Amino acid sequence: MNKQNVNTTSAAKTASFQMRINPDVKKKAETLYASYGLTLTDAVNIFIQQSLNSNGLPFLMSPENKAYLKGKAMERLMVEVEKGWQSAEQDGWVSLEEAEKRLGIAHE
Image (cartoon, rainbow, N blue to C red):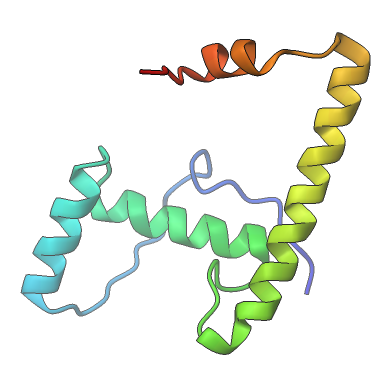
């Protein structure tokens, strides 16, 4: 299956989608998403976009996938570590204090 280059944020919204949901669940979901400045429609579009980005469900469905999750997290970590090394070599090293300052971490 090919990944599609579709962006649900900017794509024209000319089709409709209807679903049935428990009214209490709907209200709780709307309240939750509203706390992030999103509508239920926004949240569904984000879910769909993330599904397209990951070429499947954007989350794993069972606890048996713990080893898989750990492996994927390690892959991501190593990519970020490599980016960090390249950045440090190119732009110079930053002290722990400077990094914490940039990240807004205050010491008491």
